Image (cartoon, rainbow, N blue to C red; front, top):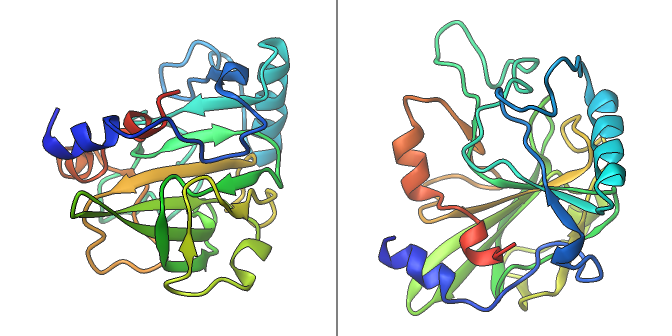
Length: 224
């Protein structure tokens, strides 16, 4: 564990979605290419995934499904932004997903300010997205919140301040969130580079080491 990961681990437990949904109501969910729960299932669109995840949560008596960091997934094959004839397929997820109902409040992971936001509209993209900038022990880094509602970014301002645990947004419906079952994509980013309102949340195998180093496991912070 490097010094930045130790810094994240040293923080008190935090939530990035509604605190009224405590961690004892969470269940891990595996959407990888090797997932037992997906074996034999033909989930072709966001409606199929929404129904499947809701049923899985009900069976597990849970309200939130979480997981996905460094998962290799097939669900990105439907979108050209992850696949093209001149680039290696991007199918490794480098954030943490929290699957629950649309309109669930999204919370700031830590004290921070708005770095940027925008609506990434392409099929399979984030939809409305917010990036916060944080400083801990003189270390500057960022957190990304993807698949939000349109209202979440309507009145937002650059450099707007948020305290840890303060609502910053709401989860978006399938029609606006990039065409996914409702969920939050939460990602920690050390170096945002020149990105604005966006940052890759899925990478190729060839790029994995670089992105893994720049985007550590969000559960170091969340401690689910």
